[in-house]
Amino acid sequence: MNDRATGLELQGYLAEFGGPNRMLRAIELVKKAGYERVEAYSPYPIEEISHALGAHSKLPWIVLAGGITGALSGWALQYFTSVHAYPMNIGGKPFNSWPAFIVVIFEMTILFAAFAAVLGMFALNGLPRPYHPLFNVERFALASKDRYFLYILADDPKFDLKRTWDLLEKTECSEVTAVED
Image 1 (cartoon, rainbow, N blue to C red):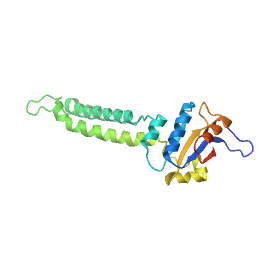
Image 2 (cartoon, helix red, strand yellow):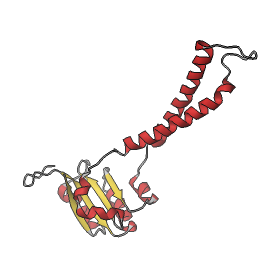
Image 3 (cartoon, one colour):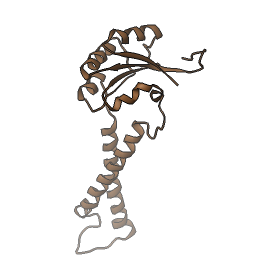
Image 4 (cartoon, rainbow, N blue to C red):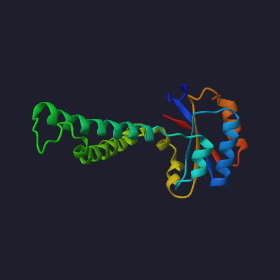
């Protein structure tokens, strides 16, 4: 939504709260109203906020896929070298002696899972992101000190300029700010 007077595009509304309980009640109200694109910011992690927002991470599945890929890669590497590239019969063991492969498979599983966790975290968090429209709001710097913020994005299907603003003002927030880019 573009403001013709300033030329800035509205990104959403940001409500400021003095405490976590007020913000949790506001999240419940906003979620009951049907808003889906909602973010919350607090100076420290609060598990109840994640539950109230209904946040589910894809990261565990990414790490699992990385671990399985690592295990299969470790087995395939050893199978290829032991059976096809350099087959050596040592002590009458079969070429595909999987108990000898376990250590490398284990290490490759951990290596690939760790890389998947780090790269997946960066991708899911949208990093590196040197700029975000919330940085334009002067009071948002307090999110890392002692304030709690609830952000409703303008691309939410239920977002309406007047109704969303009125809904946030009904909460126990101290201030509502329009976030523009």
